[in-house]
Length: 112
Image 1: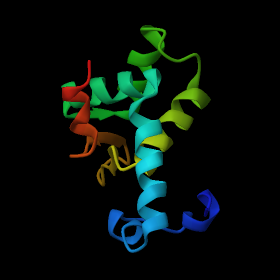
Image 2: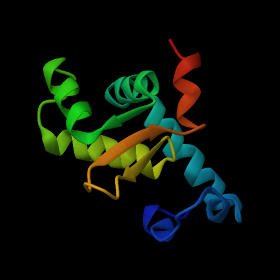
Image 3: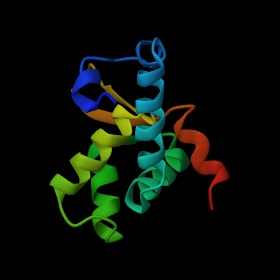
Image 4: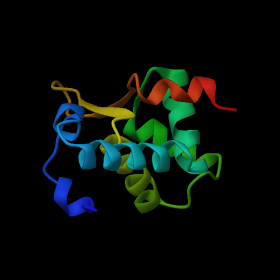
């Protein structure tokens, strides 16, 4: 079975769906993303705000003690981006990073 390194250059769902192995890998990645309690909280927050800045999301997660530090934040956010649950959008005027929920990430509306 192929591992993560076989798919490291894939950037879209369409690239993953070209092979059965890619589809299985993406499905596995997605399930690990949405079944993790920290990532579920992140998805819930982003879904509720529709669009939230990196700074505000980090502050909220730290204040609610969902995460311990910024490295934990970056790891989980990057996982959600890689699983196509969240999009990262950079504001061209000031360079600030915002996060938006994707259609795949909206599954959080149907989970507990």
